[in-house]
Length: 412
Ligand SMILES: Cc1ncc(COP(=O)(O)O)c(C=O)c1O
Image 1 (cartoon, helix red, strand yellow):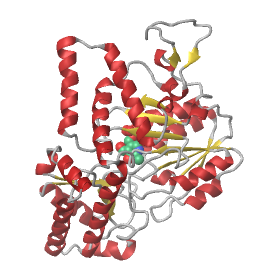
Image 2 (cartoon, rainbow, N blue to C red):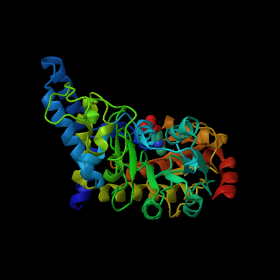
Image 3 (cartoon, rainbow, N blue to C red):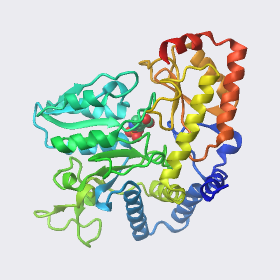
């Protein structure tokens, strides 16, 4: 075993859920490790027995900001703490100096509602237009997005990996085109952050919203918003609090010169009030774990497992969406013929039946947009994948899964 393989195996042992479950559901939420739990416990013990050392909490927040910035190739001033993806996107989108008739290019069918309603709302509030691009076989078509950009386009927005069917989008290529055209590229990174290597500079990303509970293996209700410095420094947040103002070295509750206050540097201006300190504690610890393995190795591991799963399920006769060798496959595998408009239900009884069978056998995966979605992460191993493939074989033989076979003919 080489050092990285050993480190990954050691890390798996820190996730108690892996002892009783085949957990392939990071796309819904990641697992919490023992060290993360211990860090959270220490924080709560401190709050319970001592109140809180506010200066230490601020230091904690800044350490976490710096660590996340390093993790994505940004600088600390380009990072703000948000509640989640929706909050991050809204914070940026509402701060833009829109003119009626400006437009946003988006492939709504493949976006999560988190990245739809903020723009729909602005269409009503500010008279912006949405230029909606149709998906092609579960993919967001790069050429159509680029083709939709015109002189009134201010933003192109999309998920780096869709929540279903889970294909990866060539962000860097679109980013280069957006930069050339003076259009901002806004990325919903909910499904890629913490699993796929992310570098906002190399990928030409202008704005990126993420949450903490999926690939970053942290807590719900907290996220990071990255806004490129040149852009952030021109924006006026719609919500402004003392943390969004440069108070120099003054107390956090001091107001300073109210006639001449300055906004905090870069994306810091989007920080609103007290932070979610417990989430910052948790994420600092889980980022440390991911960085110790190295995000390239994390990506290779998760994508290797999904490739193994896709091949195994296809060989077992299941309709792997896009085929096992789809070049856009990252760390997700989805089973089914096509996307449905139902969020968490499937029309095909075979999809529901197989899902129930897996749940009964301690496998965790989720139905999204009518398809059964598997999503491994760093705590999974080949045994997890092989267990699911074996269950797929026994299930197909037992049930003569005829609708899967029909679906396969239609979708693969
Ligand atoms: C692509 C994508 N964006 C956003 C979210 C969640 O949004 P929020 O963090 O606002 O709850 C999810 C899943 O929960 C998702 O899959």
